[in-house]
Length: 386
Image (cartoon, rainbow, N blue to C red; front, side):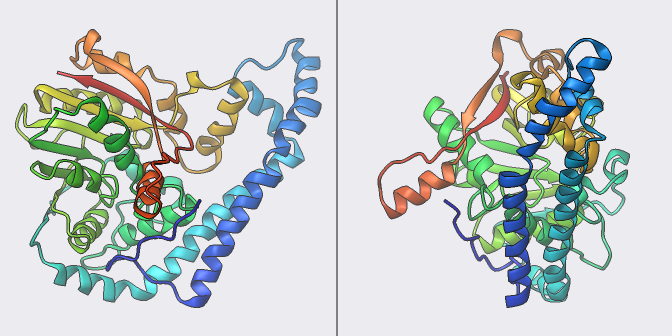
């Protein structure tokens, strides 16, 4: 099930040819991942693993040794090239559409004003070096680069690009991470929890932030990110969708909020975009910012200890070949231990899996009222209460 992306006022609109190209990139990606990439397991079992065993007199024991065995296999190299080229052309297909409409999008954002949401940017803000080192996920310029006054291209590219890249699996509003945490965990598990102030760390365009607005309509909601273009777009997007959020340009490692400011601190796939030392600081900052009785909740994809070594090798491709330098390092961390080292009590710190696909349940309930959860997997969550 793949719903069409919701056409809000800030979303860049592709022409017929631009849309055809984006659809082609989606189809190519599906073909690679469904029909070509699985062949690597056969190559590993039939060719690479026996060669490694003959050389070392034992099977590969971790993802690094599997990569050693696979890296010169022509089929694996060809598949890797296809995946990387698909990634690069995908962004180009989206950027063509964004660049054509950028002046109009900038003006539209300015005219949005701030009736519901607020936007605070820091002209002296220093982008962390770990974000400037590479274009994360091959997105040109990463999440922070600016090329014109009042630039919001990174945000517009992200909004459309994530939908195209993810084949729509985050739903029409790219909001399944926040929506699933709210609908499949917080509301059913903590029905009496009513946070007065909520902070979303590393909010990007606020796609995962907005479900908290709906879930907790009386809460004051803040969202931070290091990228000004992301935040400009996030602010205008929230206004277009009728949601009130206070966006500000800040580093989640050390914010300017007072101690014990929030009842709920969340993030959505932020941790794997930053290095382990920064993850530790985010945990410490989360503890500092939480009021007594508050909750911290960081969402991620599964860690490596949740996978067999071959699956770890497949996931590790992102670090080795796709400009995700911290993807694997963070998946090796014990996030619960980091949370306790940050100050959370061991008996109040935990991890769990939360069913994803809440956007499907929402659509099914609205259209069919059949109550089908539509979940296709799980988000990994590390959480703690204070």
